[in-house]
Image (cartoon, rainbow, N blue to C red; front, side):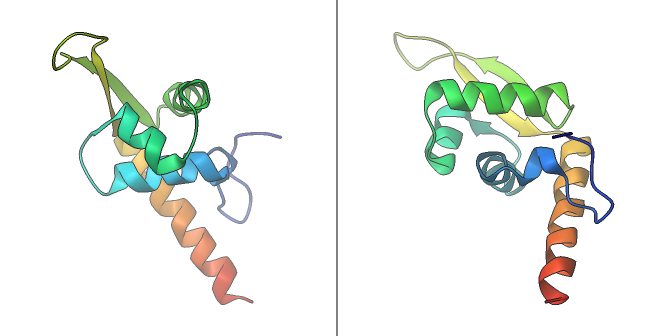
Amino acid sequence: MTDEPTGNGLDPLIHEIARLRICATLAATTAVEAQTLKAAAGISDSSLSKHLRRLADAGYISLSRGKSHGPGRPRTWVSLSERGRTAYTQHLAALQRLTQAL
């Protein structure tokens, strides 16, 4: 399966349910801590890492490290890029057209 948008406007990269949940969460704000995304998508740490990597490789998200609150690893913050926001908006519009056609 390709990650290129289809002729009907659906974006296969975003259409996968975990990535759709990630994009929906990110679209509502400027940046979200990775663990919040993990909970929102209902996925494991390793699955989140793979999904974020796919979205980052496509230029749909930006990742940044912030200081941790106390001991432990630094927190990873995720934000939707302009390209990602556009792709997500177009994907939602395609879904809406599809459901209205039924």
